[in-house]
Picture 1: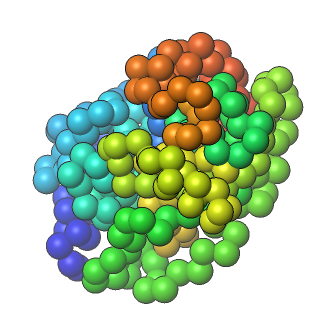
Picture 2: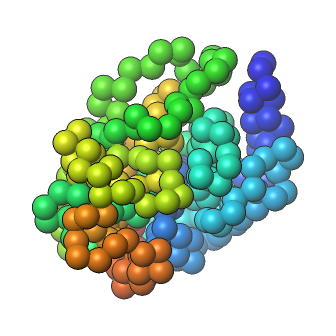
Length: 275
């Protein structure tokens, strides 16, 4: 057992007697604006990251495991850790690896992003079909965590086709238009330059943000089934007339909170039908 596996085991030992998840529980990592879904959970419980031994502390999102039922279906939320918070990539994926240890097999990653592709205006939702993660280290770098997965995992079909189909059905039921596209992760915390956005567009990116891809890689390594939804809060730099603004992103996300909640509720229900 290497050092990271020991850290994960210590945290898991602290959690396993307190969190007992039903089979089919969906794991969710909430991005900017998505965290309010925790308020809608029934039979809710929570354990802050601060209570876990030798575990990273969140400085931006709520650092906690929160579980309960959403629309009658079991879910567990894990607060996001970012690379730009000063964490190593393998530390940022510790929450989702603990979800795996707790028995979660389906993972829904959500985020806020800047729109690059035509049509992806602020307020749009995009199901992630693939990603670009060329600009920061892999979370699998270093000694392989063999207890989770192989040294060289394949990333073909990383975003599960059947979960993508389930998201499309969920969006239709929720009355939320859902685009499909490629998401690019950049290190942050600064927003991208217009030149970087032009380069990402040439590479095939439809939206850009500062999370998600690293988590998806680690989840695939661990054998989890992955889906992703990106909420476009702003035009990427150089696309619109106004530069990206952090407070503006919160305002747009707040306006879309009912649509986010409806989409997540229907997505969890659709995922439950796949068991």
